[in-house]
Figure (cartoon, rainbow, N blue to C red):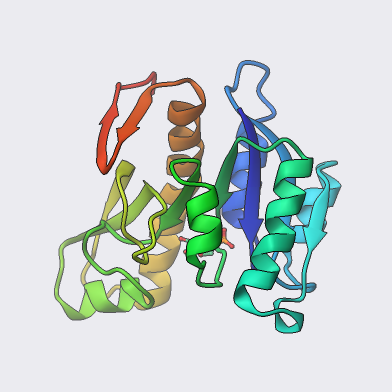
Length: 202
Ligand code: GRF
């Protein structure tokens, strides 16, 4: 499945998806990367992997104006699925509507817990013993939508926000390629807000 990745930062999740997609039998091809600012570290990583990268300075556009430019690039590249990976701009109903059930996102919490920001800090402060990450279909409500896959990690005594975030990030880099493979191999069925995922190979 022809896949685009949208980033705003370093793109470590993007890099994990690009690496996974190098496998001959991987059921997704990364055809382009789109960045919401010109200084995203992920742009250089995409180019080094030979993947076209389009960077926009989001400060030059209103929300929907940027999204219309992004949508045009996605359509020109024949994209069939969009992976948000550290994309830090709220999306308007325009792009979310245009990519309904064709746009997924990774969020660093065990949704529905801790939607929004500072998820690791919130898990520690709540005294949770478990935390993790989620790949889900994007809906208008932020960090909400049918869940494709999740991975959990223990919260250990003395964990700082950074230590826990790093433990979760390791799982993100495994979970996202796994979730994209489930979608690309046709193992995920979404109807309305109901989702069925056939267990894929590990
Ligand atoms: C990660 O915590 C991810 O869960 C969130 O953005 C953070 C940075 O991701 N979406 P990346 O290193 O830019 O992929």
